[in-house]
Length: 209
Image (tube, rainbow, N blue to C red; front, side, top):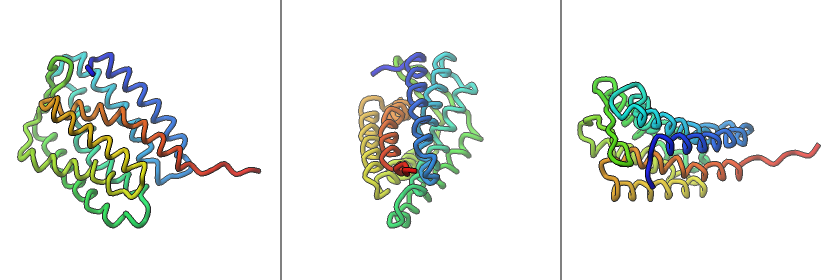
């Protein structure tokens, strides 16, 4: 798979449409709304990256907006959404990934506020550079918050989503190590279709009048 401004724009628009349907289906289950809205966020994320392509990388507003969503926002949004939607029996163990997400998001937000993030077009991918201190700890906290919360959710559909995103993370590290964060976010956006199926399955049946 290759990426470009057009590819990101088309993918973002399609995933955003999935998000609209997902939110509509979850309207009667408020606890599911944060996760149902995740494809909307990821779709917007891909559309923002199309602007990064058009700017030929750099450190402009599109790059900063992309980094804010990819780094602190997702690190907190995903475990919080899973905690809202998870069955009661799973909520205690989900405190671990949400704590990891809070700490990781705080650290990432601080770095974004104090350092410049830059994007570089590398062939058919985009590489982002932030100069993170102790990046290995940040990566562990981030993956525990995002993938870990899904795998610990106690919900079969969310666990499947977590497995797919974990596989995508491994593939991205193996094939696109320097562009890991960009390619993994794109993979996660495509996998958001699984969230639509999850929302549809959980939708309460219509009551006959």
